[in-house]
Amino acid sequence: MKELNVVGLACPQPVILTKRAIEDGETEILVITDSTVTVENIKRLAEKMHFHAEVEADAEGTEFRIHLTHKEASTSKVNSAREAGKRVIFLVPSNVIGRGDDKLGEVLLKAFLKTLLDVPTPQKVIFLNTGVKLTVAGASTVEAIKEIEAGGVEILVCGTCLDFFGIKDKLAVGRVSNFFEITESLMEADKVISF
Image 1 (cartoon, rainbow, N blue to C red):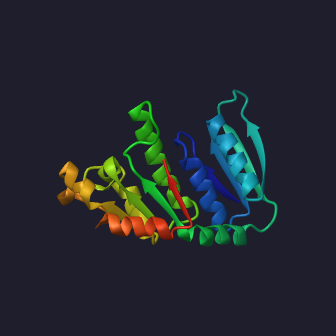
Image 2 (cartoon, helix red, strand yellow):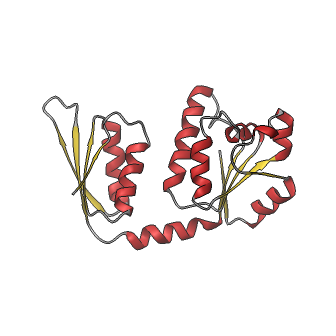
Image 3 (cartoon, rainbow, N blue to C red):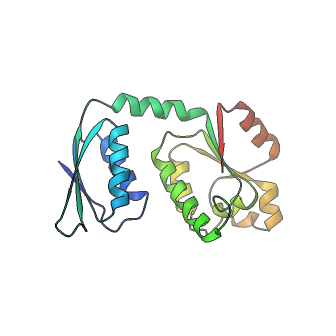
């Protein structure tokens, strides 16, 4: 049995680690957490990945043990989902997700980029407007984007946007693109997802 101690880890890391264990072929997994939110997220993942989830709480209700057991083979479903994602493009037009509190928007965007490592792989991720600030030296998101790129995803960064902010020389991940290529990519995609 694979044991995952995710106590203290922020969302979405517990789900990502559990999903990786499932994709690695584990049929029995024990997840230990201190978060009721993580319990609910793991239970939803288990259902989606064809696992049964049984939860035990300690006497104080501060630590939870989630026992996951395999219901049926899900490997082919995981692989087909990855194949289906090849024509998907993510468009990142901002350095935050949503409107309202920018601090929260930054947290959500970082979580999204980390999660993108463990969902069906998109064909490309395109950064525009203030989204290009995520790809330059010193940005806390550079390492996550490098991992996405290492997984075979093409990272396109708007050259006009980099010039506008005066940061073209600081590009740390991806390659400089232009609006002809970006438009062509968007038109050829089966699905474009943006925030």
